[in-house]
Image (cartoon, rainbow, N blue to C red; front, top):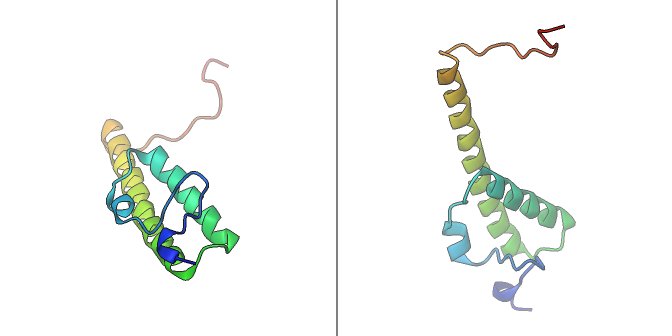
Length: 95
């Protein structure tokens, strides 16, 4: 079995492709979807060792990207709220 040509996903993901690993995600949602797919495939236990390592590396990159996006969003919310986050209201103020 040639591990370099192994394609673990039916959708055509190829963890051995260097161009995919170097490609930044389009947005948070696509990064999260790709990360979830990687986790699912790794949990299946069907990946060869080299593909598992490549998947782990890509997953770490995606996780870092997602955390950075969430941190940036949190900072934007803090700025919009003048530096003080407002408590979340669960009741309708008109009641």
